[in-house]
Image (cartoon, rainbow, N blue to C red; front, side, top):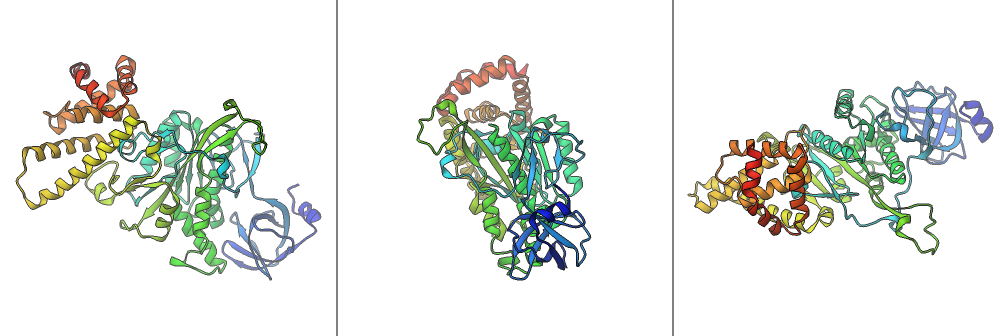
Length: 504
């Protein structure tokens, strides 16, 4: 049943529109209305129950429509659900899960409610598998784990989107389902993301969920819910999922607009009091989960390993800062409810660093526990060196004379920074990042200048990406090294062979 008269005959309740404000409609009647229930206007448009008061039912519009005072309204006795299925892969969807340009006759696997409760602790598992981003500075300094919720934060125009697309490419190429939620993004930006997915030939593992700034606020508000619901569907199918929520500050602004129009009491910065709850509930739907196949976990039956699979939903929410201000209300909220953040520094961006990630102000709370001992030691050594190098750079401002040791440290720091510099259209495998840093650390290019070093790094990377015996040899060296010191010893012994190979 999908006609107004059909719903009216079933629920036996009718409401009348008495007040209208942009996005929010006030209806008198409908005594049996429930929160988040889907309703239908006699014109055929849908809305969602947003709030209930003594006199009115507040309806949130989900589509641009000319609703007039006196319009009749009927309950549907249903909550908002979206169709789900493998047909979504490679498609662009709106915030209601409707595929843009969808041909009729495609069958859906199931429907799911958008606003579901986050999974409980009984089906969650510690994050213990690494999440590869394809960005060297992140994989080595602020590593992530599968199921981590990592905030990406920074000023506008600091290449955050390019970093997110690098993540998408790396994960989609490895078989992970990737969902990009473009929240209130310009259609030009959405088209750019869609073209990237098509050109890089990763559409078969990606889904784009998009809303535009000129959509009704209710549609923008639902965008992250749609993305995370799709992610949960593929998680339950046994797939690892990456979800990008770009960006949550825009989501908060549209929710503030809805709340102010609904005359809710404003809090800090005029945001409603439940904005933290709204965002935290979305974040809690991510994580690392145990998927029990054909099993009732409430029983005391012994579970075999074959009946349990580990799956994850990794979340990368985005927050936009203003002039590097960390103390913004929404920004600090998101920091509090995530497992760390990657900070894109405007000053670094202006210096020409790409990506403009500040490793000293970026945090990963659970990523290191997913690393091997080798990577943990490497990360500790690298982080300690970067701190020392930064202190020396600041000390140079006093015009002090530099000792040989200080000059070597500064030179090595500049070379490591050249390793971190990475074009936005390039992704670097984790093993390649590890071997390049270890080679720098052991002194492969200590006598060379930056320009020669960059050429050698480029040749090394090209040789590795070609595959073959060189790639296999490098991978074997890393896999056979239990600690960072063991890796360095192996590189010292094979220094001549490796350098001769890349010079050919």
